[in-house]
Structures are given as structure tokens and as C-alpha cells.
Image 1 (cartoon, rainbow, N blue to C red):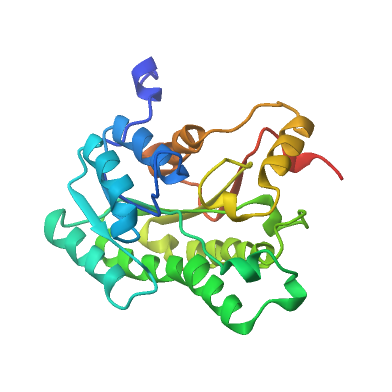
Image 2: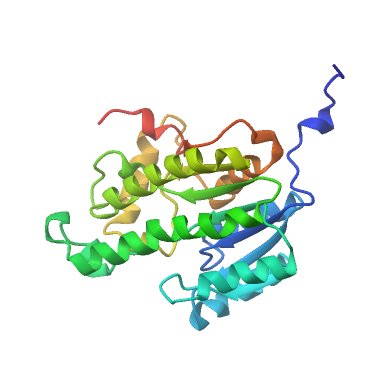
Length: 264
């Protein structure tokens, strides 16, 4: 067996194509992932929600020299499929994607789970969970060399976190979905993971009541007392998308300074 060189240990995404779904602005976890994966050598495609979001996202995507920059509202019929058609035409294959999409109507998000409307619940599950299943289905035929599907969760999907409310069971469903997708797609060489970061101040997080207080409390109690950044998530995502992570699939991976091991 050849000795391992120091350069062999560097994560590389050269000759890989990756789609990033859910970028809203420079503070998005999706942008942190896109930046790191691009720096590791990947060709990156980016989607934005609508014309309003395009104003913030397109300049970031252009900095990344993204060759695919497209609108994608998963609630609009055909938009997700159009993105994957473009991937097929422009790249011919796909190696990884990040699903960084979650949504619930504000009145349901900030109310009691007991009072959540059927409409609000259906929207949250469709956007936050079923869209990942749809992405997996569309990505499967394009991942001709295997690949990696990544999504994002939070500790509130496993234990009750104050003010996380309805998103707790929604994220729990997403985490279980990851395991089933991993089981079904493993024979195609497609790996599936959920990354569970600690609180990060993003536009989506601002919808949670008292989020800044939650952020301060959790990192004060975390063993490392280190506030995780969107780029930290990017470094982990780049590793998982790389060939160095073969042999790993179906995992829920914490990136929260160790807060997940602490009791209440």
C-alpha cells in the first residue's frame, strides 16, 4: 500500500457539479456551503425563490462563477423540474446538492403546535420535507457516478426546544426521510445526510420568536462555547460531498459546539 501524502488528505471537489437550493442572502447557510464547495473546486449552481430574492442572490452566485442561476419556488408547478432539466442540458450529470429549504406560515410557526392549521401543516411539510424527496427523485438519474444529497435540520427535531414549535415535528420527519432515502438509494452510490447545525442567524431563523435569546443560551451552555457559522457548515458539507466520505450515509451529523450532548 502506498504511503499517504499530506496532499492526499485535502478534500477536493474538482470535477464535481453541485446544486445549492435555498440561498436567500450572504447570511444564508446555503451561501456558506456554496462558497466552500466552490473553493474546493466544484462547479456550483444556485437557485433563488423569486424576483425579490434574485436581487440578493444573483450577485453572490456571480461571485461564485455559477453557471446555473435560476428561480425555484418548490410550491410552483414545474419550477423544480425546470432546474433539473437545465442541469441535465448544461452539465449532463449531478454530483451533489444541498436542500436548504424550510417554510411555515408565520401564524402557525409562532403559535402552539396544538393550534396549527391543516393548511399550515400541509405547506410546511410540502416545502420543508417533500421537496427533498422530489429533489432526490429528480437527482437520481443524473447521479451517474453516485453522489450526495444533503439537507439541514436542527436539534428541535429530536427534543422540545422552546419556541421551535411546529418545526420540531416537521424536522423530525425530514430526518427520518433522510434515513429512508439513504436506504433506497445506497445501491446507486448515492449518499444522503442531514446536517444539524446549532443556531445561526439567518433570515429564516428570524421568523422564530426570541431567536437571538435562544442562540445566546445554547452557545453559553455548549461545551465549546463556539458560535457556529455558515462557513463551518460549508466545510462539513464539502467533506460529505467529497469522495473522502464514501462509506457514510443516512447520518444525522451535529455541528453545534456539542450542545446536543447536554442534558436539560
